[in-house]
Length: 69
Image (cartoon, rainbow, N blue to C red; front, top):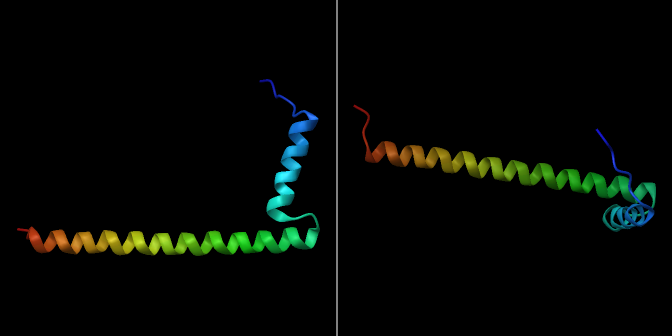
């Protein structure tokens, strides 16, 4: 296996994009990371609830149309 190393331009670009998202200081990085984690958990919870409700509503709907013999 060969691993390619990043050149200086790519490292600088990656560092700049990281600083744009999370900030430069340790405090801002921690705060933005916590905010991002909360958003991910919230969106995950909402999506899972929507999926469960839609699955069970389709199940109830199709059971009412096609009775189980």
